[in-house]
Length: 489
Ligand code: NAD
Image 1 (cartoon, rainbow, N blue to C red):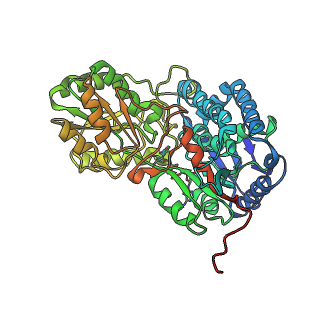
Image 2: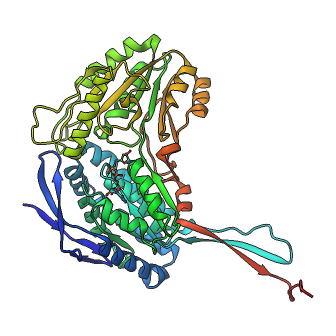
Image 3: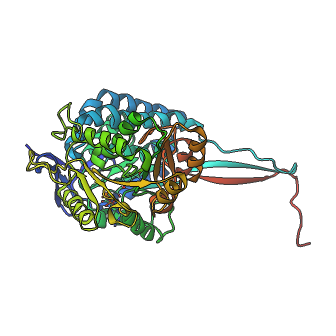
């Protein structure tokens, strides 16, 4: 039976002002999972008002940083208790294999909350080296109302990347989940509510991007937008945010290079590069979707890679043995098919997959796919496909690898496989990306900043630095003289 969900505004579960709802689908079956209230501009406005009120007055406003941290830790403990349920809800909503939600996405998400709960009472200003007759100190203050707009690939984890530092620093928030996956976020917010988060501190308004998302990013009383999603939407959000000049942080798309040198440990490079592209069905912003393999090791590496990729088990995301679930939506499935057709038209060689899985006709399942003979000017080497499609490009030497790897408008992540330490350092400096993985791929941890350069966005989530994205530095001057100087005589 389908479940129904309302909006969460000012600590209450409410229908949308319009009374409209939308369906959220199970990507493994193509059937409707849940019916969700559809938020629009009016609902966003109510949510922003509630968040403003909670920021300016009431228990959250008055709570000490230590108490805020304690409350967030209490929520984290509840999340651990309900982690298996959340993992299942997440997998039902976006098709991630349960092994990936249960052992990676959900634990990583709770770890982020614990990390920032610990930082809540360490957000501090400085005492500066002032002249002896004047004194300057800085206050590190919350921004106010944060708007968080998140995608569907890791809804809970990517929401927490924004929610946890925003709350730890004392802000309040309005979250706009992706229309494909609102339910896990609504379930998570219930846990915050049960743990005692004051009304209005967190508000969740599911709805469509062009309506609810646009209303949030253009709202005059929102102090900052934290966005994860596509580069095109990031550009629209910047424009909308410019109406009241609110700052934005953008975690956008990628076409990350993954470079295998002939002095790499080949077995590790095969295993790590497969995780780099097929984890999350390739719907990972940092996925290593352009793989560069050195000529001298090409045949050996690709034989082993293709042999292994053929055995990936695609199927029901709730089955513990599944290694790749369905793509999130029919629209994504069709988009991937279109890219495969373009790859063939432009002359790439389809070495594996390239089609829907025949065993699961109603779900949005796609086969692990590998294109060889790809060149940097082909569409499949330039554009983000956001699916399990790998483009393999040959290279001669280090200089050639670096030139080809950096030949992209994106700059999110990159990977290097080599046993040569000097080369590691040269490549780490030369690659134009927010993250460089060495002899690994797609690693994440709460302590390590994550974000992009070029058209992959700006701002860094995670790590201590992320607190800076949710605070403002205020400079305070105190005159220590008994009299003020008389400049105008
Ligand atoms: P998307 O940009 O279409 O949607 C993301 C969110 O933005 C959704 O909540 C959507 O409703 C909202 N949105 C859409 N149009 C909007 C508008 N005009 N105004 C305001 N909000 C709007 O992206 P997607 O297809 O859902 O997600 C896939 C993309 O996200 C990929 O490009 C991927 O690389 C990127 N991504 C990046 C990261 C990262 O950390 N860099 C992580 C995950 C996904």
